[in-house]
Image 1: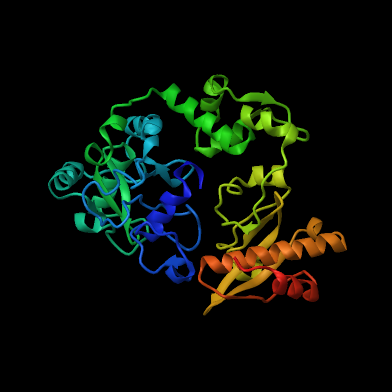
Image 2: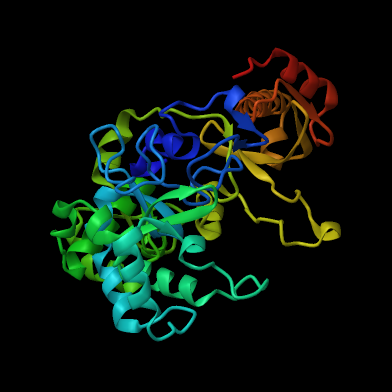
Length: 388
């Protein structure tokens, strides 16, 4: 979940300050949700940080109901949910957008002034309330108001701190962002130093490209500030590029045993979003096949990597039928089934992960349709696994 924190994300997705349970989930998405894309993909789509029990009203994202600042949507690695306390760290990006000019669409003349006036008088508002998001049925054929509002969000005049269903709720930054955060106008070097240091802490160890990709920086931006981050230059066996490590992670290494989760990961999970790094660190070639023609798919439409024991052991292509979670296809890595004992432990890990995933979407049964694990071993593992 990163610095946003599980509580903020669950509040944004499920509302009312309640942790999601089987009863509040339907097919991987909330039955009622004041914010965000769901689908069981943590942070794959942005969600708003709302006050528990609040509606899409003025100042909806000013706090998170826990003494913090809540969250906002902006460009980090991609369109992301970020702690509102990080607002000052992205000043460099807001300035860069302003200096570069409009992003994909030319901003129509007069539209931004109209949006500012509407938000000042009537905000917060959705794009629909501002006049609609699309000019036609084409995906990228944005309306003038959508073009204008997204440009104002890019440059920091407007902020999204909440969603209603799929729709962003926009407000003037001067009203939605706490004054103490607006007043912290960091220069580019200060922003970059903080973000590169944070990337290093999150990754543990990474190359210049790894550190840059975490917040979609340029590699020369990393180079100009990395010495000021306190990250430690290191050499990693098998890596040809220079690397830097988090000093706290290095201090823990001598007695580090690790705490490993057993779970299915979203194809967009931050652990695997960088395919080159995933291959280099885990020896795991990750590819989303949703856009691959059905006949050419190897692992499935939405194959989710299986994480267990700090390793990526295979993939599961999930589906749902009533209250049954279905693994349409299970594909294990060769190293996960190289010996009888590895096969059994991998089957046990898979069973644990499947039952855990079933709990996410309100299912009370699990069925595997196709698998390269021996059926008797897999059936035994599923029977003996403890549902989450």
